[in-house]
Length: 344
Image (tube, rainbow, N blue to C red; front, side):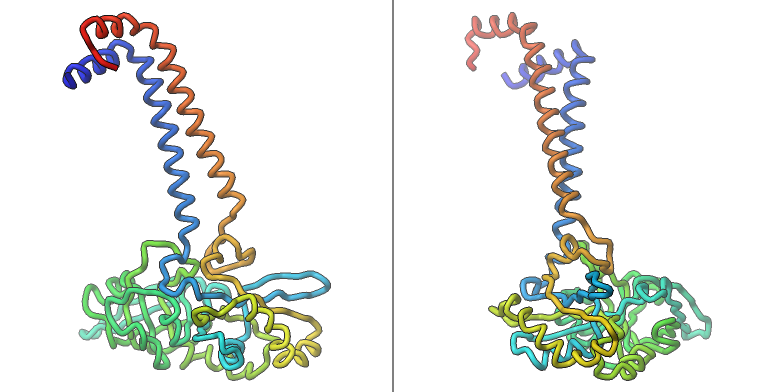
């Protein structure tokens, strides 16, 4: 019986080729468009969701008030992270990031001296300087090295597997020295202390290599800044809160904290600022400020979702209308099938 159904269906398709093409192509195009939009929407809402500590991870942002206008930035002074960990019992761990490209360095020169005496040179992008605690907050899969101690030493570097394979040609990268020439951090020999496999899921931190904040020009700059919390807001600060900690209550303590450490310096600088917390899982869609990767838009997602739904509804209606219009031509077939005892 099923063989007969398929045979009749195939004959009808071949007999009405134009009708079949319009009907099948219209529904397929509608479904394909809808699925592609849904995949894009899923990708946009998946940013940073894979991190193990994502529910307790927050970024510290700053609202600067200059000339009566408020401007939001994901930037804080270097000293702020440790001061927050010291003053707030809700904070379990802190980490900072310094993004090279935000300060004019689009490419960083890597040079590796082979054992046979020849040298290899590469320009790499998406470089970041990070604290030793960075990999305790964010989840990275290491193929070489210890994730918990990777950046403990000054002048250490963690690289992606892609960079490691390119520089060391498939050989182990651990403990080897790379000469890194950086506009932001100077010229130094850095020891490879870890190799990570980039996650397939998206993140607002799109770094291809991470160097220690200590041992170069970045450390020198932090020493020059001292304990001044008014100037040199160049670091992205992240907090890992203890389980059960209330982020809103912690944020309410920030004005007094800022007045304690930066009140005098802010008055002398002639502007004001205030700190706020932003869940890391919301950064991509709700940051409303310049992040490390281009931000998304919730409004556009709603618009695209509506378009996908509209396309699917139109495709279904078109398919049903065409099928109904052709149903009268198959009434004789239905009658014969009923006479022969066919069921519904």
